[in-house]
Length: 510
Image 1 (cartoon, helix red, strand yellow):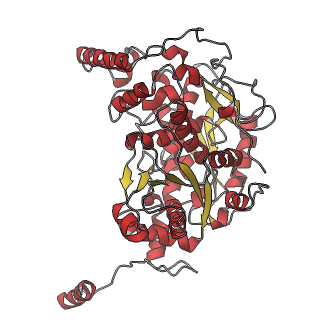
Image 2: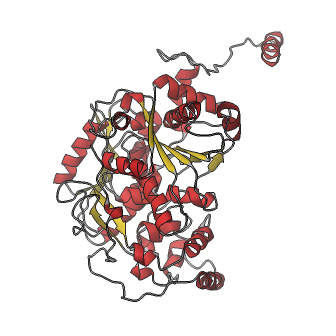
Image 3: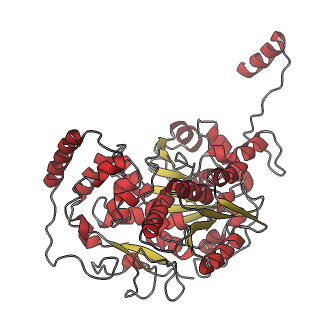
């Protein structure tokens, strides 16, 4: 199949989310000097106000960005009728022809500010406790949900995750000197899903305040989505419901929504079956769908791409490798990079690589067939359980992103992904199996010289390794059938005897 051209390629009409033009015919481009003056003014006002009230109350007294009322976003079809559009305040997930929706920003309004202005503004907000800009997502608020009130935002200051220079692993294992790992799992619930969920739950919070009859938010999940949804819904006081495939997620992932008070339905099916059920349920009940079928999620997730550029002082890496399951994150990263390029913050795009587990590899099969014909598959069990998806919702989005960046799709067997994660752990990391998939694919691309020794490469680590400790325990204990465990490091049992201890130590240190 061929991927359809999305809304990003459509002419931007400069219309607000209501569909009515709100921008004057002549706009004034804002200078960097005006940003500096505004920043100094804000510092003076902050000092004068002191700590009066909570940080949310302080945000309510803050003077907004000049021209910020001109910023807007709306739902449009990912591909199809360019005249079809919807307010972000509408409960809608698909276009009239059944296709996916996309969030389209008024790029003309954003372009009134030069690239240097956005760089300075984003840099100014990083790591602060100013509400809501201390969040890695909401520090880019104007590019995410520009119309939402600061008071409606539900945030735990997610994002701002570590971009880790994998010096020893790159140098000794792969012969690379510029390998980086974006630790998206260093977040509130332990995965990149927090980035999307803060955007979606904030919008739901806004709509509930508007009187929209939304009784709860719900999702189907392979574990990480449910953890993020339950936490953010709990923070907002919104009921949440999660559909989980029985016995197919880790105990750590299961306990998170339970602890946060979600109604957890453990269903005897796989993720794709849970997804079908939640779509049927949300069509009948006032439950807002929180899966990546809902493009609001991607608006938050795209900020990880912007953050990578920011952390590299606005230099573009050569390759970005992303584990792929439902594939929404692939398009989200593409959107983040594309917005930066379109608004002049950078001058090129990285080459994107999607890494799939061999047991759940429908995109890889389509890639090998030249994208001529995509066929959903029945995903087989994989240690990379969060990407155990055979019928990805965002397949068209991902294919488009890959075509636009001359992208690559690779795969890794169960042994390859577990060995790759364990080998990297020996250099100081603590990888989830999904990161193991990405590292295994990277290893293959180095072996065939697709990626060179000096290419700046970023591996996206999507979740924290502590969510998947059982698979690590089994690997190091040699208890996984069919996997030798090349890098296993089991504990050594020894008697309570000085001589016995010394024998072990001398043998190891010799």
